[in-house]
Image 1: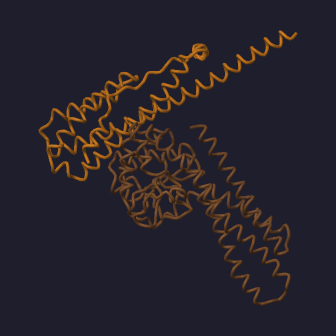
Image 2: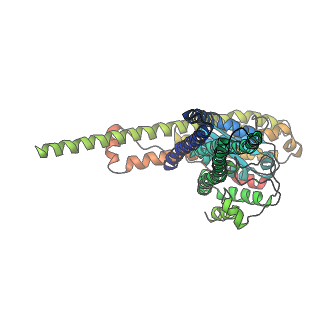
Length: 302
Length: 184
């Protein structure tokens, strides 16, 4: 567990460095092409430093916001609150804030930067379909993510990589539309060469960004999902609870409206917008989560 | 000269080991104490719930006086218990009493369906599972502490520093988990 925490801290630093380099490079390229020199680099570095800080500090709020999660009181959801508090005691961490996401698909996630600043969010569908033991299994899984600081990496990935992807997309679009406008105005020939370079750069970013995001996301998630399942089972001392919850989740095909690529890896099970999506081998290649049946099998073997 | 340095080096290492182990023992002891107080908080919460529960059941089954008295007695003896073992014994008594009280309530469908009773039952179940989790955490910490105290050479540091092994908190499973599976 302590090893896991150290690894997650290292990973966070690496992620932030990567973003600095990536956004810095982007800024340098644009600065160079626009003829303002190092100014582009400096602006980009300032922006990405700001981005890193805010995704560390406010990433959880952002993730909760885009998931439309709503804080609930003990009076509204006594069962959920009691379970979260109980498992926080079992894990020896402070009680996380409790949120409910108004979605009918059963699912859950945890976010935050450390156990002292953490939140657990579950969907209304989870509350409606799970009994106490199953809900305990799910919350224990999320509690393990909090214990291991997986939430830190996950939240940084969601907000930082999400932001980088957004910026890259924006620049690509800007280039397409702005480029055409300039070309049509036809004021100098030098601009043409510049835009050719910009086109290549833009293309590279367009290709690299999804890859960049994909690699990080898949390396972040798969192994630690198995680990959180096992660790969660250690907390409840009852692996069949989570196994049975996962079975119900696997059987449910309700799509989720708030599902998106930036936060997919945070959820207990891969959320999907399309109803009835199965586990095709091609999908597995890109998915952030291990196949749910494999997880159930491992829990049942414990 | 060389021999002197070697001896000094060994003495230094031994002292370093002693300091590190002593600090680990302190950390584990503090953690055990903290987790014991966490159990205490949850036990207290359960004591607070019992009068409400008794009142709720009384409203429907006033004649089951024997059960009420038993639960109330068990509660007050649990509240005044001291020491890990005595506390565990009193808690077992109390758990049995509560179970009987709930069994009585089961015979009154109106009571069982009342919102007040359902809320109380959720709080009771929640608190009992919290007691179980707190106990689990406490026992884990105690196991770590006791293992360190008993294993050589840390045992020497433990003896010199005055670290006695702690008692485990052994109570009957509060049946919270078992009964819940049936409940739904």
